[in-house]
Length: 205
Length: 126
Image 1 (tube, chains in turn red, green):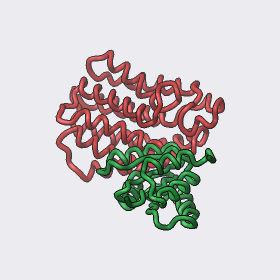
Image 2: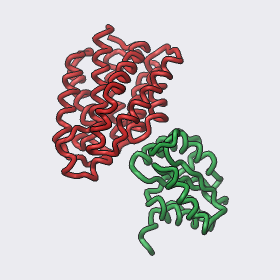
Image 3: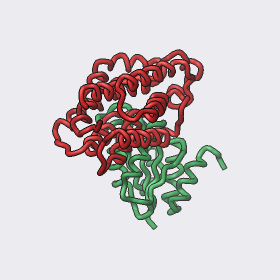
């Protein structure tokens, strides 16, 4: 299966719906371990992305992803802006002049993960969104085409595991052991991103 | 060589303004530009504000960026990567003390590398 520019728009729209519906929930999670602005920031950023993609037409997935990235960078604020912006920009750059079929898309996600690690100077096991992106990509590498159910399940179980991790990066790291027992807000929003991708795949193809 | 410009990047516009005021007591000739708050003036940082501040603060002596908390650094890095200038440095320094020392050193005509180094040693007191 190959993702078209329209699929990217569907992916972004579905992500936006989940974030808008869970804005208060993301905020409450971030109040427990961070500075409490993740829900507001993500809701604002993705609303702007939807408007941006709606106002333009795209010939390929890469271009739609680029506008997504640039809008997230400038509109989200907080750590999520540069992180999600970088992730989508790396995916866009990796898919430039290529079809977004499975192998290319997966290579792009690997570039996104490398970008997240580099931008956040972080790695797996530090209670950040990387703890969702990394296992999802690992699992995808075992497959040869998109598997919506597997994608969602992998993201969900990875998300649950962030509860037991002690934060050593980001604002939550100031809380030390107090961060244990709470879900990482960035991992929850990343779960929405992958759940939305799974639903996009189910709807198309 | 012109004095290197300085960009103050803070999660709060008020913090950035306040630091500029303090620096002005000792140094008025170094370009100091502010990138405080998000582009709708909430707490946070904005790549666009940082880019604009870089363009205004830049001199032939280059420009030094100083930031306050984690995400400010990420946005500073993005702004540097997107800029056409290749003489921008990011100081890993306390915002107030680092910017204060940097402004004084820049005003004395020190190079960008020296200004950055001075900012990063601001708390060492030697």
